[in-house]
Amino acid sequence: MTSDTPLLPSRLARTVETLMGLAVMAVGLLFLRIVHATPPPYGDPGDIGSAAFFPGLVALLVTGVGLVLVLMAWRPAAPVSMSRGRTSRALVAYGLMVAVAAGLPWLGIWLVTMLAVPSLALLFGERRWPLLLALAIVPPTLVIHLFEGVMGIYFPRGVLR
Image: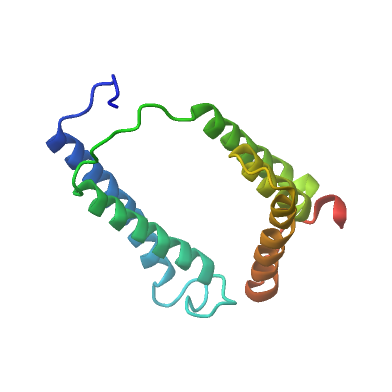
């Protein structure tokens, strides 16, 4: 199955993808440089309780994603291209994430995550209710305790104050 949409020539597509990957790597490295500046502006990036730990971790992940994008630009072409996507589901998921960001200050982290995580799973086809219930409880609990208990980064409590 091939798509009817015109594709960029292989050399141009690889160049564009490589440049995009290098740009993502540059952003990640820039933020890594800021986090690891001397003297450390936000505390020791190696200390999990410091204000620099999580931004440094995210910057490292962004740099890694950029490297993966560069490497994927030079992989052999796939034999079959996708002919159709699920754009409507992706847009609904995006809308849900916007609603999460907008509702977080009022509803609080617990309610928002306990509704959003299983809703996303439901949106993408999960129908087993025990698993949806577990998704409503386990990931929010782990993430909130990691951030608040270990890293000292607190989220809004909303209506559950």
